[in-house]
Amino acid sequence: MLKEFKAFAVKGNVIDLAVGVIIGAAFGKIVDSAVNDLIMPIVAAFIGHLDFSNFFFVLGAVPAGTAMTLDAMKKAGVPVFAYGNFITVAVNFVILAFIIFLMIKQINRLKGTAEEAAPKEEVLLLRDIRDSLKK
View 1 (tube, rainbow, N blue to C red):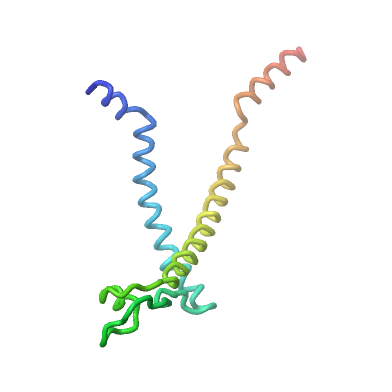
View 2: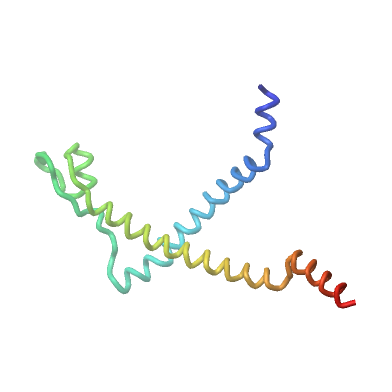
């Protein structure tokens, strides 16, 4: 069983997956920073602050002296329907997905120019066949 586990653990797919998860976590931090530190301030300058997290409905009795903020309501144990937080997360997701789309599109464009520079092996083989048939 130990041999099988060792064979599984050192397989290329498992190692590739581990590297992908680590790179993905680091890339996630970069994209999160790009959204929060670069994109959202620009969006906020044009549209206004996109934080709807304090939009909620109170579903229970509010204890006296409790501030009417989402954090205060949650700390007091008041049931709330926090639709604003969902809206904020959804807007951030759409912006994040669009940024990732643009990044992948740029990477694919750069890959395309590199692939066009070097002909594929099949093309080289077909050229050799064509040249030998001409002789």
